[in-house]
Image (cartoon, rainbow, N blue to C red; front, side, top):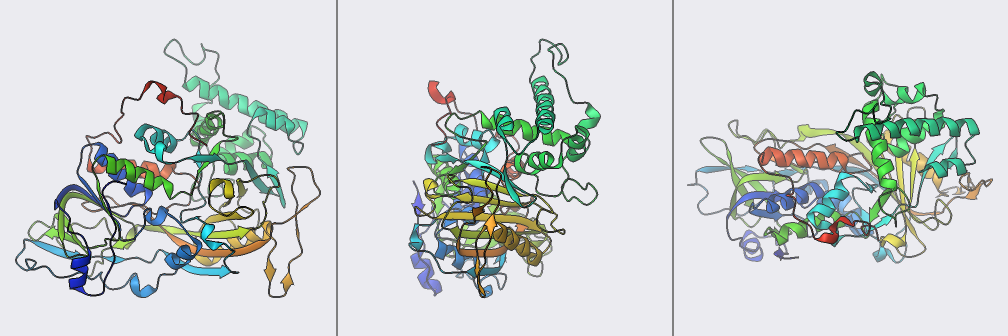
Length: 566
C-alpha cells in the first residue's frame, strides 16, 4: 500500500521521538484514528472528495476492531491487561512550545471493550494457519449496499468472496434447511403440502408488492396488475403480519430470523427490544430475493470475504491511499488539542509528541475522554463512555468436521427461546472452512454471537448453542450426543468434535457526533447495513455538501459484476 509507515515503540520519551516518523505536512482536512471498517470508509470517502487525510492506528496492523487475527494474537488482543486500558491518560513526550501555545491538550484514555475471556483446549496445529475475525460472525447479502459500495469505489479489486453454502435454523431440537427459492420449497420434505402452498401464496404477495414499487411512470401498480400490501399492514409488527397470512411457526421463524436476520424476539411485541414492522421486513425479503439471483457463481443469498473480514477495511484503506491519504501504523493519538479561548477542536497530539492539526477528527471507539479531566469549555462531548449501548456475547470454535456434511460454509440461526426460556435474542452461528483461507484443510472455524443484557447470561446462551452443535469433552469424560438434522432426512449425525474454543463479552458502542466524532464498534447484526448507514451519517455530518463516494464513470464492462464472488 502506498504511503504506509510502520514504527516500533520505546519506553523513553526521547527514544519515542527518535523512533516515530515526523509527519509532514502538519495540517490536514481530516485526521482518522483507527483503521476499522467505519474509519476506513470515512478515510476513503473523504480522500475521494479531495480532502487531505491523515490515517493513523495505535496497532501495528490494519482493521482495529474489524480485523482478522491469528489465534495467538486474538487471545492477547482480547486479554490486554487492565493496566493498559481504562486507566490513566496515554503518555506522550512534552513539546517545547506547549506552555506558550494557544491550545489546550485534553488527554485520552483507552476503554476496555472486551471482558470475561474464557478458553477451552489447546491451539490446534498448525495454529499459524488460522485467521480469526474480531467482528465475527458476519456475512454480506449479495445485493446489499456494502457490495454496491465495494464495486462503485473500486475496493472490490482488492478483495474476493465465496458463497455461504447453506442456511440452517435450529427448530425443535433439529437443524432444518432454510429454502431459498420456490424450487427449494417444493423439494423440502419437512414441509407439508398445506405449508408449501401457504408459503408460496405469501411469496407471491410479497413479490407483487415489490414489483409494484418498481413499476414505471406509465401507470399505477393496480393498472400494471400488481397487488400492494395495505398501508396499515405495512406499519404493523412483521410477526403479526406473517400470522395473519396463516404461516406456521416454523416458516415464520425462518423468515424473521434466517432471512430478514432479526436479532430480537419478534413474536412478543411488548418485550422486543427491536421490533421489525412489515415495511422493513418486506424490504429485507426483497434484498434476500435479489441477492439469491445476483451472482451466477454464488449458491445462495450470502457471501463471505476470502482471508476474513479484515480484508474489507484494508481494501478501503488502499482506495484512500491511492487518493493521497497518508497512513501511519503503530502511532497512538495521546491527546486532543482545543483552542483555549473558544474550546473548539484544533488537532491531536501523537505518541511521538508531534502536534498535528485538522478541521475534523474521527476517533476509534476505544478512545475516551474522562469528564474529570475535560475542561468545561472544551467541545468533546461526542467522545465519552456514555455512548456504550449494550453488550454482545461471542464465541470462536475450532472443529474437525462440518456441522452439515458435504458443506463448507454454513450459517446457523438459533431463534429466540429455541434453547432457553429466557433467551430473548437470536444466536447466530457461522461455520467457515479452508476454502475461504481462514484455517488449514480439514478444520473449521465457527463463530457464535448473541446480544445480551449481561455477559453472564450471554455466555450461557453461547455455551448452550455450542453444546447443541458440538461434541464437547468435559472433566468427567466425553459427552455422548448426536446431532439430529432434517436436511438429508437422516435419523441423526454425529456432532463435530470441538478442539478449541474461546468465549468472551464485547461492549456495544455507538457512533457519536459532535466536534469530535467517534466511530461505532462492530454491532450485534450479521450484516453491515447499520454500520454503513451510521458511517454515511458521520460523513454527512462532517461534509454535508459532499457525496459519500463520488460516482466515477466506469469502463464498458463494469456493469458485469457477476465475478465478485470467486
